[in-house]
Length: 488
Image (cartoon, rainbow, N blue to C red; front, side, top):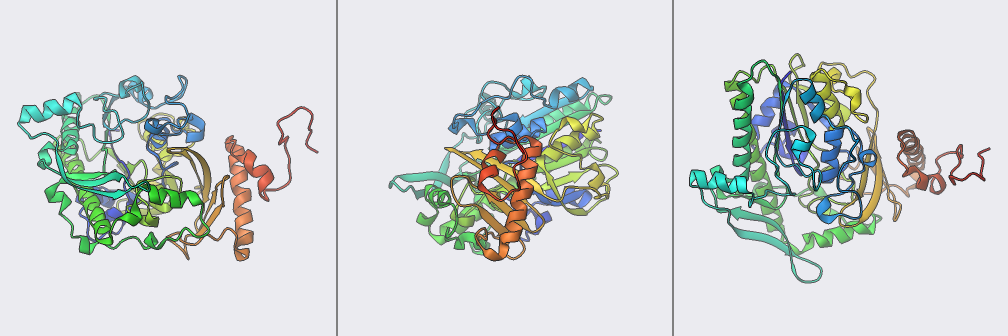
């Protein structure tokens, strides 16, 4: 089975028509959703680029593959996957597939997609590498203007200096954007694969956006009226009873230094970025249709993680395990699946890895922390997981967190600070930390015990901190890891 795989970066679920947005235009992705299954509880295993992408590549949770942070702001973790770490690209190639990846890589510092079995240019970095020789040649060959920006939007850092660039107007036509360049390269690859009709293909297109800064041509920068933007209800965040790091991150991302009308403009520009990327995905899908490759192909869409866009007075992502950055779009279209299906089963990027292996005739169990979504897509949700473990290890500085998400609750363990408990039904915007609420004590303790059990079963050593600190049950193992203590 041929596979078309699309991945965006820092993409909020609520920007898509398929997820209920009535303003933002995303017809290409909405059409894929109408033909396939839309997952309403789809999560990234960790809300940070490199570890999430490494999990997709390996089918392993971050604590297991150990690529735990973005290398640009490395906090002392490893910067390359281990030599013996399983990845799926070589498996596909060994099964006779053409295997391509066009776009953002951001997995390691030395190895490229080619080292993992993928065709395609090596495009390093966390945001559009607009100085890349291949992109510069693309502009020159077509007589397109160079990259240039105006109308920069920034806040002010706590030390009084200008904050990070959050958005800007791109002084180029859409044909000159890096997104159009990526779609062109993907289309070229698709046509090359079509010339080998007896050989199946896997083609991934990884866009660098809509990651901030939101830098888009004027027609997209101004596409949506800021007056039509409703800021997330969690801009009412007070950080009362929350880990202090969240307030620090809010200051770092300068939210309180930006007027409300500018915050609305930022969201409007983000929406424009989303539509621009959807149009480029549509171009690739239209080419697949033209070549007769689409109807029988598996199609996947997701993002490595979400984006705050002002939620909880934050931008970007970071050490706060809110739905805004952990819940991401998850759309799967498989030939023979049920069209227009929605599922509220818990699923993750790791399940995409298992599903890719499954539909290409390989062993989905090689994705050790994922499960194939094929049964759900075909209408069978029996025996599926009832909750999901999430993790974070740091960005700018080490900051270990673990979370357990259930149908109603989310528990977050923060060893250096206060823990968090949110009722996602009564408090969907996660404004009220109920961890210390006596009325939630039974729920809290049950979630702690559940998370502890799962971490031990997985071999995630984070559980050691929980052994002595929380009511997780009697000690049934040598918690001191010593020869002189024997569990009784």
